[in-house]
Amino acid sequence: MPEKSEDDAFYELSCYTTARADPQFIHQYVIDAFAAQYANEKTKTITLIFALVGLYLHIEKNFTGKDVQKAHMQLAKHKKLWPKFKLPQYRGNISVYDVIAAPEGPKRDKVINKWCASVWDAYKENHYQVVSLVKRELWPRKG
Image (tube, rainbow, N blue to C red; front, side, top):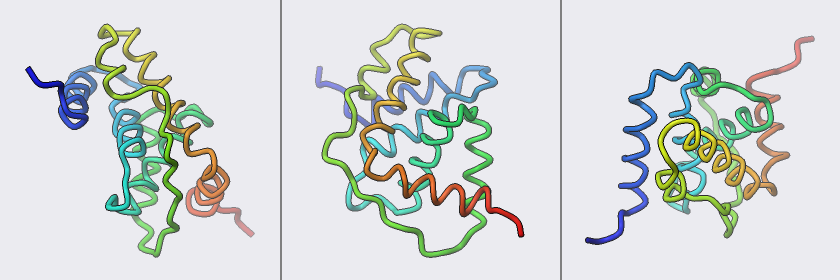
């Protein structure tokens, strides 16, 4: 039997996360980690922006998945030319395969968080640009 593709592993993980009655809405973390880890030159700019903003808000600011989703909706209201981010060659030491290999429940959820942190860290050259975008677009200073 052939090994699962990254997409198949993502779909399996998505079934797991969407089926959970989870107030954190960890499914959003999975979407963002996967999008950033497997982004390539054909990935839409907005897809990578949403993924990196989501990872930043989750890892650095402890946002729930629901809060990240709200931030994405707020960003979507801004129709503009978005900045491009540099795609790192190395995308983290945890993959979607590692996540689905973990036992379901709290252990898998912990691996999801480690995966997010690993992918976010892999994009460290872009951190300043992501933080600046969040401050400018989501938390602008008044006055």
